Image (cartoon, rainbow, N blue to C red; front, top):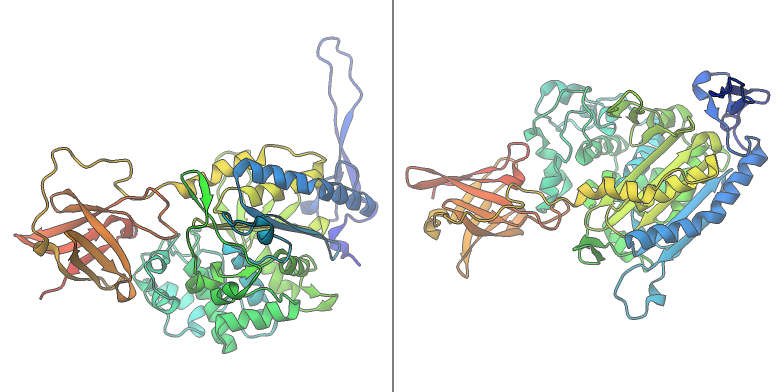
Length: 547
C-alpha cells in the first residue's frame, strides 16, 4: 500500500489558467491552462504530470519511461565512452526495473565473460554518504546518538583548531558539511597513504571557515560524524553500518570494506580518463574515508535501500527507522549552492543527502559519487511519485549517471527529455579532470639557474601535519619520499635554482598535474621545503631537521 503522502489528496487538483491574447486582431484566443496538483500545504503543490496525476496515470508514465530507459542508457554510454553501467528503478515498494550494460573491464579477450548485470558490484564513491546517513538515522532511532549531539561526547580526544567548534560541533554539523573544514580537508593525507586514525588526529591543524555559516564539502568531516555514531554503539564504523543497514535491509552484496569488494567475483573494475579514453589503470582503496566514499554495492541492494527511504523508514511495511530521524537527513539543513541569478533555485544539503526541486516543483532527494581514478554513480528519489532510480558506472566522472537519471525523470514528469543532459552534465563535470599545480601549462625558464649541489637538499624534513619527508638521490635524481614509511615518492626535476618540479599522483591529481617544490635557504644552508600541491591550506612546508 502506498503512503498517502505520495499522492495528491482527492479533490485537490487545481488549475492555473494562463490567458493568451492575439496581438494583431485584438481577438482573444481560447485560454490555455496548466494543471497544478495542490495539497493542503501549498508548499507541496506541483505541476501535474503530462498525462494526468491519478495513480493509474503515474504508473503508466513510469512504465513508458522504463520502456525507453535502455535506449537512453546506450546512447549516453556511446556518446561518452563509458565501459559499463547498471541501473535500477523502484516504484510503489517494488523494484520495477534492473539491468546491466557494457563490460566490467575493458581489454579482456572474451568480453562476454565480463558483461555487467544487475548483480555486478561497483564502488559507489560519495553515494556512500547517504548510506552512512541512513545508518546514523537508525542509530538515532535506537537512542544511541542524536543528530544534535556534539561529537566530543563520544570522541573525547577529537580536536579541531577552534576550541568552540571542538566543543559544540554536532553529528549533524559534520554530516551537513558546515563544521568549517575546507573541501578536501584530509584528502591530501589519504593521497599519500595515511589511514583514518592519523587523518582524524591531524584535522586540528586545518584552518576553519566560519562555523555553521559556510558549506564546504568534506569527506573527513562527515567521517568524524560517522565515527562518533560508531563510538556511541561501541563498534567500528564498518561493523556498525553492516548491523544497522546492510543486514536488516538484506543488502547481501554491500560492504564498507575495500577488501570485501575485492572478494566479489562479479565486480566492476574502475576506469580513469587518460588522453580522452577510459582505461583500467588504477586501484582505489577508500577505506580511510569509508563513511564518505568507501561503500561497494550493486543496484539490486541499492534498490532495497531506496525503498526504505521512500517509505519514510519502514522496511517491508514494518517500523525500522524513526521517520523524524530520517526526515532530518533528507530535508535541507544547509545551503549548498547559492543561486547566481534571481531565476535560479537554491541547492540544499541535508545530513548526507542532497535536497532539491525539479522544474515541476517536486522535491528530489539525491547524491552523486565520483572517483577521478575511475567511478561515477548517482541516485535520485521523487517522494511524491514514490519513485527512485540509481545508476552506477565504472568510469571516472563523466555525467552519465546524472544524465540518465534526469532523462528518466523528465520522461515520467513531462513526457519528453527537456534538454541535452548528457552534454550538459559531461561539460559541468569536466573540471574534475583539470590538472592541478602551480606549474601546469608552464615551461622551464630558458634562462633558468642551475640547482645547487644535491648534498644541499638531501636530508630529513619535518611537518606537524604531513609528517616526515626525506630527500635522497637515486641515479642522479632527487627523490622526495613522504607518507607512512616514505611510500609516496616523487622525483624532483630541476626548474630554476632551488625550485624543482614534480608530478603529484593520486585521486586529487588528474593527469597532467605539475607542481613546484621550492627549497628555502638561510645563508647558504637549505632550511625548509614548500611543496605547492600540498600547500592549499598553508600546511605544505617542511622544516629541515638539524643533523
